[in-house]
Image (cartoon, rainbow, N blue to C red; front, side):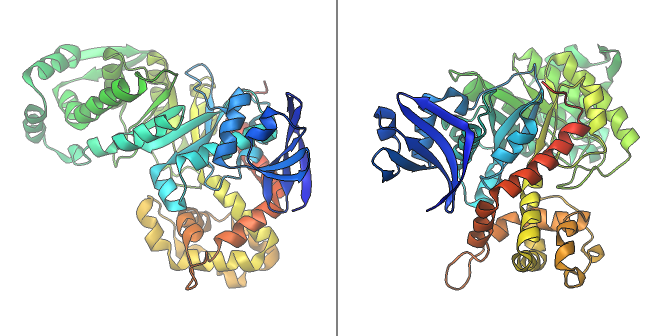
Length: 482
């Protein structure tokens, strides 16, 4: 094993042992120099009597956490902007941190959903390990977050908090009925009586019925139809939010950033609905760090916003006012590459927001493959194209595959630009799980091993691509220098 590069910004000396991140021909390792008790705590291979190469594994991450508290994820609360930087590969953190290091915003490096874990055959421990080692590698000491993203089930919430995630995004879509917008007033009345008790109805009607609320100058009214709609739509979801908060968030002995997601529905979140959910949570003493409504238009994966930007700005301004009124951050999900609406997000939140990205890091990894190994990229693309409809089950996207240029007519030199086509981006975006887990008849990974070998060999090039691409997000979000 040959050492290719030393990351001197990571170097620290504790009790006579110096620990430096190094890139080797077999990947990233910690180089320990100088024997001590700490030296012996790390697993690894002796390369000299007082030198050891320690792998970036789970056991060594726990040792790193013990001596360097900045490698432990933390909550950030509502006073500073945050950016979710999900890393499905475990290699993006260093490049992401190069983009964000000097900005007035904090990274939520470890951000994964159970769906993403299953599709990539990873665990929350794997995600936390990768994030902690990247923070150490970059010498980044301002703190980072770890988000159990879009969690629905109690067992997954308990798992995420138990392993040390510092943020919980509660996906309430299972408790929100997409049929409600189609209900008649009579049907709403019937459902209202069915799902609520007499005391609950009395409380709702005393609080909202025919009342007007002034929210940062925005007037929000509830006639009977508005009230019935919101109770029938969100009552069960609110009960679940309150239960999860009291059972899992409030009861732990550390701070947890608690985000509410009501964006995974078929219906745009109206100002009345956003206010209703937020007000109920406030009245039940649920401390929310951020909330994600479903905005107008389309926030599809890996491409810019689909819709009227001016209409989005008007809609977003009201949601931002509601968030400010209740003291939490408005959260923008599927935020990768939404460059056209980022200025509105920055403007109407006064620069205080949470934006989630993830898939864009995978796409930049594919761009690196296109740059370095055209044959591998072409074979990965062909497989993605053939299996797109299987992958599409997991994501709401609407690419027109017929508009993608025949890859056989694209020269090797043009392949990196191929990743700028929206339809190709979405095709490749959603097939990541299939590409990373597909095995051949010999039960060997068809693409994964060669793909990761390339990323390891050209790690710095991948980091530079990410630094530039995430940096473009921060520019459009008008994030200032710190």
